Image (tube, rainbow, N blue to C red; front, side):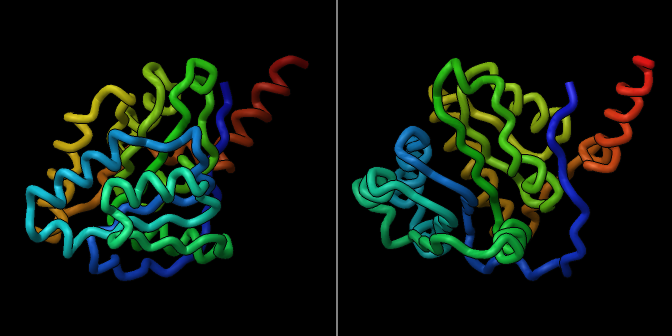
Length: 203
């Protein structure tokens, strides 16, 4: 299998957000409404006084009203920064300056084999990824093998909350970053070379 990949983009490394920002970039429609995430964040706000002041939920792209209503129901609306549609260059900038990147896939057996294209842009952003999807998702293995983040299925709320707290503690220490490995294999240049070898080997 040859996956999608990332292009090299010449972007000056930005200063990280001062807030503990969790950013989702792309469509966040009703089918991708991660209740376990909203619940975990709401509990952390109640349990840790400083978390409410430090935390910011950054949503970029089309977000359904149902998702926005759910965020409000969990009392997270005061921490919400909904930017809507922005240019691709701005989106890439936010990917690299946000503290944590959110990747959310629909909880369905039909989506297990989906590998979101933005995963590869996320991976080279040098920011840790929190990914939520169905058990057995193909993209979970990519995240794990490249050490770019942590994957959770929709029943792993306690695990998700624990990792959020770990990330928050590292943020407070100024030590929150990604330690990615093996990303070169997912560059579009390398993937194109792989495709070319595959095609020529059949002749």
